[in-house]
Image (tube, protein in one colour):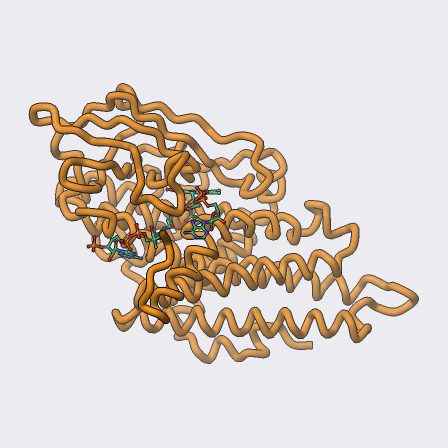
Length: 387
Ligand code: TGC
Ligand code: FAD
């Protein structure tokens, strides 16, 4: 018997340091997260503050950024960390993606020196949490339509509007909020507790239950001029952050798929049907082979995109290729694994149904599969078909 990643000799593509990082993240997930994650999912609660400190000590928060207490690791190392985190639960990877690739990245890339000094070291350590408010109730795929406004009043900015579906919202110390101004879309740092800023959690989720999802309400929120991110102008500001988080998902989704496949290989080896192990039937083996193939292809694509990112040549369209393929295939793998587990597949005793319903969110956030198809379609034809 050979493990799916061994079949593809994936390790031969990785450096010693990358393998070590992957193994360390896996170890911490095995020890501190896996034993509890199904319980958090069932309860719909996440000990986010405690987890952020654990993840901060592990060094994965903003690990691909340089300076300000960040680890400055390569893209493949970051991707492998996302893979291991998402093998535990997509909600955990979401916490890390939003903290490191969206909130911290926005400050790191577009912030003033004072903003970086104030927030980044504490966020890298997991002592402070950030969220990223782009989506609104009526504008998800089309953030360019946003209604949240920021208006100048004397030396201050006054923000009004509502953001929805915001990961980490109610556990955040700072929200990166994108708003329309007279000079186009700009980003603002809104500290928790600012008068007029309220946060309400989204309840009754069936997916990503081990993740905090919130509504941010900005009602006359007054901020000093220094709260604006000076380096981000226009929609390219927030969209530039999305490239980072989408890249993490290219690896992360394969982590969820790998966890499903490993659980299913173990299950089908011990489950007897019609007096023989389920794994001994040709129909089962065809499913297992197809899943290992898609998993391996997705991992090879992820590492390839990671190497392009490290070389500084990765384009947003290439990130879309990875996000579209790997989330779509991970969801297919999770569903196929569920069939092999039979009735057991619908319980939280196994990770498969949890990954499957989580991946429904992953398919939608960070650009829906349709949006990524359109990005690729535009690249191939030169014709934007969004509108
Ligand atoms: P469009 O006119 O094409 O572009 C406006 C400006 O943005 C630039 N641009 C990008 N820049 C950097 N990276 C990208 N990927 C970019 N895509 C576009 C573009 O060059 C232009 O710049 P400039 O200087 O000329 O002004 O914009 P559009 O309004 O037609 O929209 C294009 C579209 C549909 C692709 C974009 O709006 C889009 O990606 N929509 C999807 C929105 C989305 O993904 N939202 C995610 C919210 S965050 C989230 O989900 C977190 S989930 C939690 C977790 O990660 O775990
Ligand atoms: P819509 O944009 O209304 O799309 C509905 C359907 O229409 C989709 O199938 C879509 O593909 C399709 N569609 C849209 N436009 C087109 C088109 N031009 N052509 C064809 N089909 C189209 N956002 C944040 O800003 N920060 C966060 O931290 C965050 N976290 C999230 C966490 C969770 C659990 C979830 C579920 C979402 C999160 N989001 C976050 C929001 C997420 O980015 C949006 O849900 C996503 O961008 C889609 O927007 P929407 O839900 O409004 O769907």
